[in-house]
Length: 138
Image (tube, rainbow, N blue to C red; front, side, top):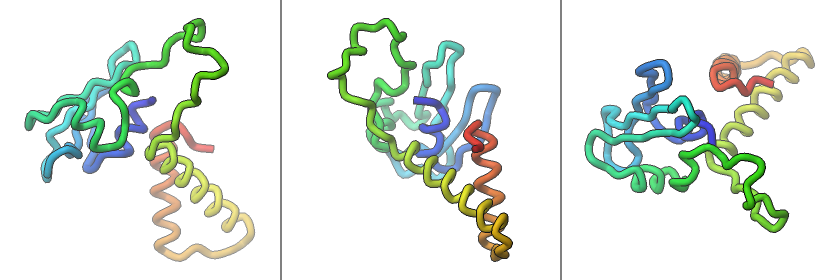
């Protein structure tokens, strides 16, 4: 899992360092961001709720597993057997795919000479900025 997938599941996300973000904690009623998310140099995702929620509680609240905070095993792992179940699609990945499709549809509408409403233009601009930021622009 990438840090962007976790960040996509959180609210009021803001950058707080080169590889660090603050967000509202999903495991308690949080109006002011109290959850720090940090991506380490080795790809691990570290989470800390300053209100005291455990990492397990935070991950459970967004429907993700603790193991997803750590990078995949190398390609020579014994867990690569063909019977090993494929990874499940997270809500963040599904949402990312939805944003990518919406962005492509807006582009196709423009290419077809259709005029977008003001709301559609804003949504297209927001989608473009998000996809550019997470490196998933098609």
